[in-house]
Each structure stands twice: as structure tokens, then as C-alpha cells.
Image 1 (tube, chains in turn red, blue):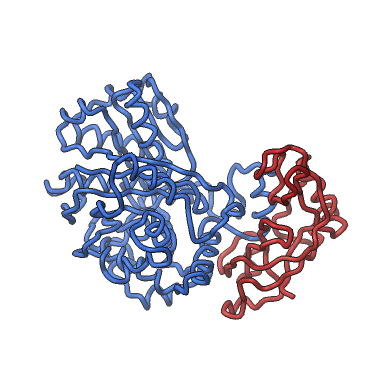
Image 2: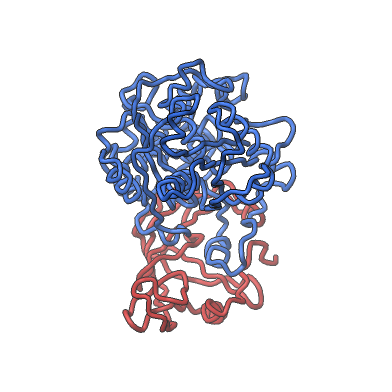
Length: 137
Length: 383
């Protein structure tokens, strides 16, 4: 079945490197060459030190659950998948990403632990766009 | 203010109705307005009224926009630029469903290159409830609170609504789901975004409202008793929830610090509060940020009955966004109700069918929240 949920449109030159790498199932992250801090989401300017020289580094693909929720109401393609778990992920490299969490039971939220280790994986939403998701390991 | 009109209303209709009301109530003619503040519509409203204002502000950053407008109006009046600032709101959160259809799952007007479009929307979040739930989970984790603790905020706020005939949830007659609710009702309501059940979430209605912020000379001359703004402040922490460093804290700490400083007052001087309750968790965390309760314990103000009718610290006395009215951007109703309780207007039997004065409060802190638990603005009025 074709992917029926919202697919990002990766035309923005700012985020193009991210989606190019995602297509190879690689997670890359923007890092400031001046203060060496990783930030998420991508910026033209470092939100920590305001330098504008940003490089892309390959991330470890490891993170930890910061907080989560179980979505019982959703729209479009996601409506068919309720309940599902969404989560904010603290990246091993710093800063935070949002995701739909995999490898968890949405009907038993008490079994999902804040701080649990997660690993990134990619789903091919289209020929051009692979979307990162995180899975509890 | 209206909840679920039978005939769809437009936002402009709601604006104009509110502006007529505030002009009639205060005796200040619409023609005297020289500054217009609204969440995005100021030029259209000025033109519709046939006014040529000297000051225009269209700050639109979610439900707290109107608290910010008051802050901005205060500055513009103090700078001597204008004398009569109209802060106005009209929004047909309910009626617009009939014309555009609800829940496309895609934020309206969002640029496909917006960080939210690329890095949040692909993950099935659909509007505020699906985001705010993450804050509740984190608060529960950090402070050992439970969804039920926050559920008491819904129960107490409903008690206030049952005293307000204009509240959507006033009674079974005004809405089949109206009338008093118990904590079991909150716990057992259907899940929207765990841990939030439906009764942890605000309404989606139509409403409008307007307030005038005027120079002291004009304030002394109006028909109604003015409420004086003792202090105001605003702060913005983030736009996208990805940037919310601490999910159990908001920038209301900074905005209230600024307002308390300007007022030369502190939380201990406040006698009531109007806090944005888009969700129970919003109000609970906000109480903590304003210094009304220790961190992790905001919910106790409701659970222990202090915020309830007859309690020592009334909060959200109109029935709140949870049970009175919530068009999408609710902050205007916080201002209207704070004015109503402090001005004595309500002592005359109310206006437009609102109930009489229900508190003895002489000071009130008002705090708005917008977007994803984001910018906060706050002012307090003291007679």
C-alpha cells in the first residue's frame, strides 16, 4: 500500500542535506563549527552562538525518550493507525526531535518509560523522501 | 459572546458585535478609538469601522495575543501616541467548521518549508491536544503528579460554568454534556491524546470580545468603573514545541516577573486569577509559573477547593476555556472576565446576560498562553 500520511516536501535548501542523507537511510544533524553544538531543527544561524558556519555531521542514530503521548484522534492516513505513540527524543548529540515511536504498545502507556533508549530507522514514504522514525531498543 | 450559533457567524460579525457592546457599556464612542489591536485583522476592522487609527497592532501569536495587545497599548498610551486603544477579537472556531471542514490534518497556510511542516506534521499530530499531552506526561514523570490531579481543574472550572448562564456547559439545557461533572467523569471520558481525556480539553466554539485600554483622564470620565493596569509583561520561549526546553515550565515565569516588577506587587497581593485553560495542564503549570503555587503543585489550588466558587483564591470564574467558551484564541475572555469581576460592572446584575459579581477580589492576575505552550503575556489589574 502506498504511504498515505503527510510527506515532507524537501525543497528547502536549508534542509536539503538532511533529506538527501535520509534517502540513504542516514541521520545527519546540523552542527555549528564555531561552538560545536548540534541543534535541531536546522537553522541558517546557530541558535546558541549565532555563528553562521553550520556543518552536517552523521549522527549516531541513538536517542532517549524525553516525553510522549498516545494519540487517539488523528486525521488523514494517521486516523487509521490510532492509537499510536508520539514522542520527543533527546538526541545523543544534543537537542531534540519529534517522532512516532515504534516498538511500544500504545494500549499500555504505563509500560513506556521516559529515558528509554531509542534508535532511528527510516521508512520510504516515496521514491524521494525517507522519513525518520525512532524505535525503542 | 456566543458558543454554538445556529446560523454560522463570521469573525467580523463577532468583532463588530463586541465593539458595539464595549462602546455602549463604557459610553466611549467608536469614533474616539485611535488605536486598533487585534490578532491579525486590525486594518480590516479599522476600515470596516471607517476609522483612520494612529496606531495599528496585528500581533497574532495564538491565544495570548490579547494580553500582549494590552501590554502594547499600555506602552503606546504612555508614550503619548494614542488615548483610546481598542483590543478586539472575533473568531468562529465552531462556525468555520461548516465552511471549511474540520481536521484536514494539515495546518492551514503553513509553508511546506516551515520546520513544523517538515519535522512535526509528518508524525500525525493534529492540533493542540496532541501536543499538550506531552507536557502532562513530563509533569507526571517529574513531579509524581497524575492525570487525575489535573482532572480536578476541569471539575472546579465546570462548577464556575454552572453559575454562568452564558457558559456553553452551564447546564444540560445549554449543552447535552453541560452541568456539573465529577472526577470520575473526567477520568472516564474518551481519550483524545493520552493522558488527556476529552474533559481535560477546552471547547471549540465561536466567540468575540473587546476591551478598551485608555488614558487615565478618559478612564475617569467613563460610565463604568475602570480597572487600573498595575503592571504587564510578556515573554516568548518558543514557537515550535521542539524548542520547549522544559515541558513543565513556560515563559509565564518571565512575563509575570516583569509584570510584578512594574506593579510593585507579587503573587501574594493577588486575590484572584484568570489563567488560560486550553487544557487542564496549561492552567496547572501556569499557576506554578506565576508563583501562585510551588513547582509541581499548581493543581492543588483546584483540588483543595481554593479556586472553586466560595474558595479563598477564585480562578477562571467565567467557567474557563474548558467550560465557558473557547474559539481557538481564548485570551480575550480572560481580560473581559477580569474586568467584569474587578470593575463592579457585574454588581449591576451583569451585562449581556452574564452573572453578577462572584468574588470580592480587588486584584487579578491574567495570563495568556499561545501556540504550543508558548508565548505568555500577563497583566494584572488592581483597583
